[in-house]
Image (cartoon, rainbow, N blue to C red; front, side, top):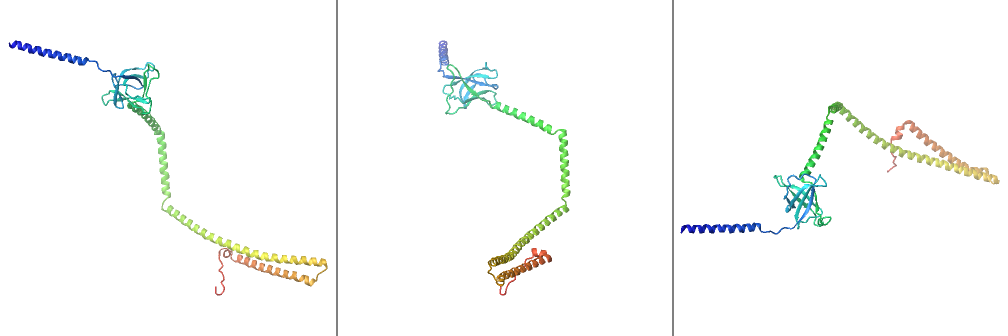
Length: 319
């Protein structure tokens, strides 16, 4: 009786396990809904080391597809042709750019899609039944490598130029220049001792005195010009007075001539007025000569007093 019960239990368990296995196999082999994708080509000119089939393709960090095929471009051996498949809802624009990115320290790479403005048109193939091509950009490591190469080249040139500049001949010339500079500075230091500084100070003091004297001389020159103007006015007045007297004499003589020609004159009456004018002219001439003589005597006696001494004004009573 006990044996029959055990066989029944074992059979029941086996049947349940078989049923469970069938259900699991059906669930595993059940056809799933296939996601619609769109193929794109990407051409890289750099190394794609770390990128494999089924590597992820991300759009701004979100996984949107996978790598389906990798090969060397048959038309250009310098390019690597990558075929990717992306979900249909991925907004690939004409200015979208593909870049190789590294996944941390694992050494694996993936393709990152970036840029693509919201107002840019969607990327479409040039002809029907063709696959559109997404533009590629250099990866960060490629840019760093190029920068390092450029910096290395410039550094090498700089070191070469420095080595040429610091050659034995240039070092000798530089040493000579430094020695000459030191000698010049030593000579300047000897020249600018206390005595030289004192002489410079005396020279500056003398220059200041000369400047003050020139200022005083300019004041005297102004006074001389003023006196010259006064003297010119005096002489002008005297000459004008003499000239006026001689003009009167000439007029009298002309009147005398006309009367003489007409036979209407008295010698005494006719000569009376000209003689008066002649006397006045002689007096004015005498005054002028006296003034000129006094002026010449003053100049001969003390020319400096005439030029630079200002004569005190004589004041009248009660002034």
